[in-house]
Length: 94
Image 1 (cartoon, rainbow, N blue to C red):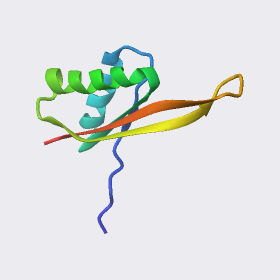
Image 2 (image 1 turned 120 degrees about the vertical axis):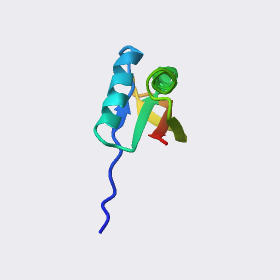
Image 3 (image 1 turned 45 degrees about the vertical axis):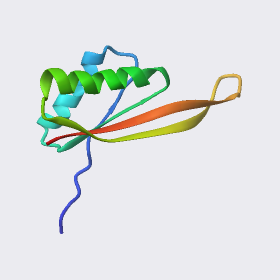
């Protein structure tokens, strides 16, 4: 039986973009064919930066295989329900 390999996931937050680029590179060095970069809210632009830096500076054969957009509902401290945008970028080496 063929085992399906689970792609490593990089959750982008408030750290500098290069921290997440290193995590992406580490995922590929571990033998994975794909890495998923996830972010939500204000970190979405940083997630896009991470993918572009990894593609343009380090891995020229990197391709964006899929982009998934969504919305999560979260509850804040005042019990208000907020909608937060999310993104998942699946990248792989060709």
